[in-house]
Length: 446
Image 1 (cartoon, helix red, strand yellow):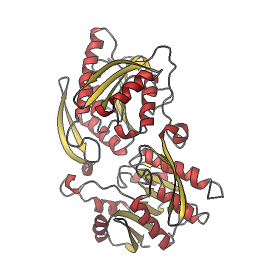
Image 2 (cartoon, rainbow, N blue to C red):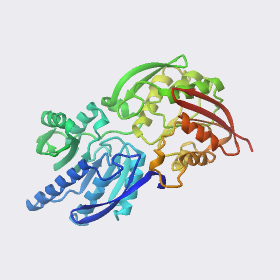
Image 3 (cartoon, helix red, strand yellow):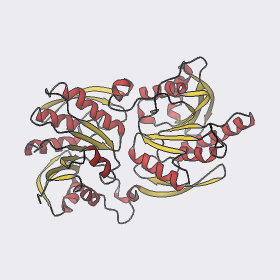
Image 4 (cartoon, rainbow, N blue to C red):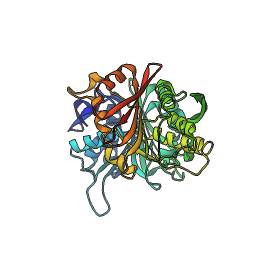
């Protein structure tokens, strides 16, 4: 975790002192952001209003889009003394984020502030995912403004429908989206606006479930996620990669919306030049974004080889987009003989995900690893942290002897990475495209 923590800050809420580790890889890496502070201010007022009116405190709380966990952890700390343990009383806080790093940092910050895992659990999942019959007394969110307008509109309707009777959603949004959210809440049959608070850069909306409205279903995660929730779809596109047309269904919330980008183009050109020596051993693609490279690779190979595939990376939406595109746009349209196994494994990086990645491959070594790592700014890292060296350290426990490791960086990082090549690896080739450089290495036998 040390590589991801760039700053530690103190914070006070309702007389409780907190300490939070922040990350350059997540939203609000310099301090607790002003939107979160505004939301917590309104939450404090509402808790006081509920107490004065004799209303019971919320027991089931959801922090949707938790980031570093500030909102969920603060809520858990102030609510725990109000919800007395008993046969039918227990505080349960669920923190969720699409980013595996957010899950790790949230769990880390919860432990740092004395919050038990039995009270607060963190998950890597889309907004409003949970068990199908999940119901909440309180949903808190510093709503991610770039989630996509259809996703944000669904959030309003679905969040209201996921509330228990008397439950509330408290949402903070940047002021540029205030009119949008006000309109969505007022026009949603499922929601009833209770309060609106305006600040210099943010607005906070408090709403509840409208009377006589049926409960909503939680968002369903997993391999059929996009099929069940088409509002995540951004576009249907076809792009030629190495003269092979690749069709993708792109989604909101994952990178590489409309074009494959230089990293993918460089990796595909190198893979084609090497005739990418795959076999039937598992294939790992790390940080696949919308799935451009994997879809191209399987289309290029056609029925020549059908390895089990594992997709890994931080963003669960990107992993599900990539899996969906392989299943819908490659396996059904190009490959003819049955299906191929595609597993999704959220990991912050290859080293932290080693155990899960080995399990996903059935404890078999990977015959090939194709990686598109996301590096943090070097200036944000603690002294002595070597991101590129850490990637090299992560590969031997995962890659089979004789296996191939294909990795793509911007040109300057690629040059530094190549200089760190350890013994036991032989460089097979290198290709540059649009400021990116793909490198391929074979791990020596023996």
